[in-house]
Image (tube, rainbow over all chains, first blue to last red; front, side, top):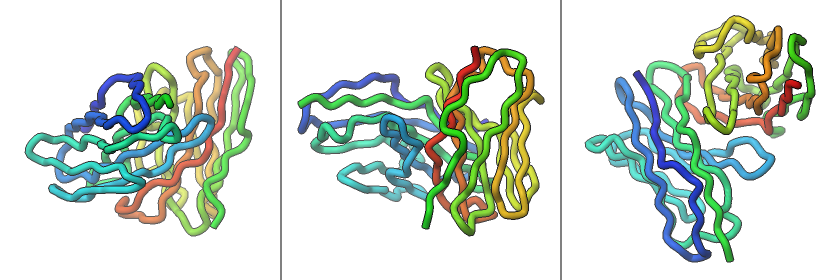
Length: 112
Length: 114
């Protein structure tokens, strides 16, 4: 079946620290991979995406590379800010339909 | 373009009641998906509608149902509410029938069952 596993939180970092949130997936076929972010009291917003192996998605200083050989899509940022505090969700969408599969979310808190 | 809107934003119901939630997708989007978000389970897929037809369905009991209208607006209904139905219900829309485009999420409806 299809599923997404991401690292448990919560994660607390100091401002300007390096961030990695691990995400691995199981899927049939060739999925597209996404990172969504949810700020307090809001819905999910797309952060970045990658649609095929070796693609790198990037946005707002965040990056993730689609690694087919390790079935991973880890999220990284070189220097986090307080405003990055949010919950981050890794997700996949199979290429045969419009159903998304989400990880359980990783809460990030950045302290000044 | 206006984003995905959901009404109401907050609801309080008691066990055994039923509830209807509404979602208006982004103009031109024909696919609407519903998710239940809880602290313990994360986001769980409920169902997806495209052009008034249910195209995908998650593993939820029959108490959870939905429909989509000709203007792509969608409603979700939960009957015989249980305490465990307390959650944030998120609606997401996308434009493509082939599922190649991203989903845009609404702010959610926070349902509390007492």
